Amino acid sequence: MQEQTQPKWEGRTSADLKGPAAEQVWPLLADFCNLHKWFPKLETSYQVGGILGQPGLIRYCATPPADPDDQTTIKWVKEKLLMIDPIKRCLSYEILENNMGFHSYVGTMQVVPIHDIHHDVVLGCKIEWWVVCDPVDGWRLENLLDFLESSLPLVAKTMEHALLSTS
Image (cartoon, rainbow, N blue to C red; front, top):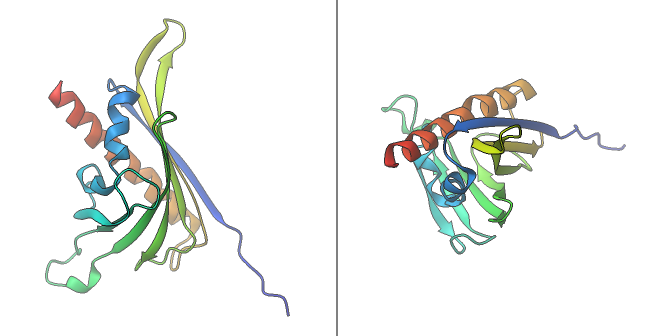
């Protein structure tokens, strides 16, 4: 009997940053092991293997428990940097291990300039994020899409605020 496989899930979203240029935002995104600085839902992220800035780099990320008295609900993930391209301002990563039900997950993020083509001016940039994964345990595709669409604007807003407050 042939085993039936479910189709891969795919999700894509983007978030605009008004003001900061792609050249300013890229180093923040490329700092793979410091995602917690930009992703407000994360408590920690740090290097657990590999070489900083190089494919093969592995980070550990964790969220705080919803209930501080219940340490068993910490959500965590180990992710491996697959590709990083400073020219295209793009990186890809995969989930190696996690306790959230993700399987065969690959995410790609890219920072691209936003141009006003009529005045030949750069207005800022946007971060694009797309994901391909197997269905997530206990989730519907809509849950994944909601996660992407609610998370990336928080990351973009945090980066935008940090960059604008230092200029």
